[in-house]
Figure 1 (cartoon, rainbow, N blue to C red):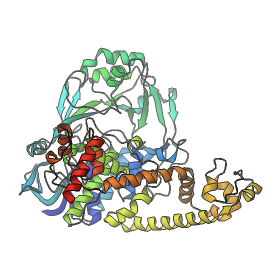
Figure 2: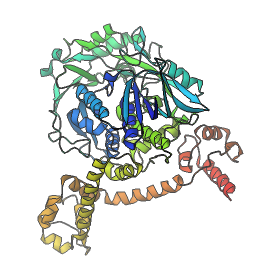
Figure 3: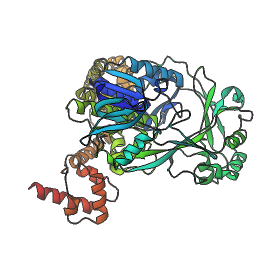
Figure 4: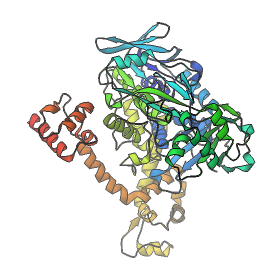
Length: 615
């Protein structure tokens, strides 16, 4: 009954954590309350989006599961922001819940070094101030020196629906009470957050013929760098809108809401507000958009994205039938809000290990995030670090200039959360280089070095890297003078400067097909190579400037702060700044600079103090 790593929870964070630990070579145990709900999509049946799609590509680049399985189960692929620059494009797909769940369960069942058991966990085993395992609800002890908690919304979870108040981790599943009590007893800073979900509708009772329909992209773009093409049939989503009558009903019964009725204390996600929030906060709007999203190819359940709610079932029935196309709709399951405990992520190192309890790692909603993608990214990192620690290795960390995973973790452990954290491209200051299209170039090599990338992906990566290297070398060698370019019909500036293929491609009126007519060997490039060369050309000037920004960032990140630094002894700091620095205990000067309220003057004083100590 002893393992290297034990992972608690079979959601998106737990699945990626268990797979990453096992991929590294650690003897891993995944404990979850129900085997049949492993890989369940508890909320919206979709993966990806703006910022989130970048995370999925990075998970995939590190040989994680989410991207490959989304390609198997995706039923409506769309590239968001397609008309904008590559840095802010976001791959997204509606997902068939059943296909994804079955694919995840099959993938984990076939994973070497991984054992899976059905057991709710109620307590941690502690010995000498470190984690030594967990205790199941049956009283069984499971021993391991590294434990990864991915409990989602289960820590003292409570469902709210009108006047109903039901202890649950989600519909039909009991909450984790003992585990939450244990975390509180350890002195961890904790709080309450909430999230919500809309009603599930019977698609057979929706008047689809009266709705605007949104089709999938004609040529679906996969999430995974290993997927050649999408073979799953694609479907359309419907679009409808709330009405003034919808808003009147909700406004009149607003006290039924968990928030406006004063029944919850936890903050909800600002960027995914309930329909009650929309009615209150945007009183001038007479309608709000709703996407009617099918939950599967052989499932008539529809997810109405945009109207999550916690009012009573009766009120939900009333307002739903005021929405065009839903006048005769039948509800299969009513919406609800759920409130749950979370741990302040400033309690964690950037490795996602708890500062107060060596060997305990936290990932997913327990850290104050929202979304499958954010959870999966944290799970992969926590599982990998648990496995590396068990093997006596150095921890894996990703900086803000390396990936959205680095941005996510740094934001959490440095700034904490006051509401459920969601990823956006705007959170990344180096987003020109942190694009979805180059996630493998940024991270797969590092993943190989860290031991989390398997041989199959490594082989594909090396082939692609060689093809890119060859193409870039060829592009640099193919040149034209302005007179030569003009004779070939290319409108370039007559300045006497010889330009290579990438520089010519930087002209908005010159495309790669134009250059392939001049240099036929360019036509042999694969679509992936063509895309990278085109993006290199489009961003060439901007990337040079971003490289300088990254170098400045690196200088601050490379200046390490002593682990036991006494901030009370640092002169020139206000009491407020001392308290904030002591609470986070930043590892570098760069991390200290990102703490809210830490001024440039405070950083100068801190730097001077550290240098005097080192002298």
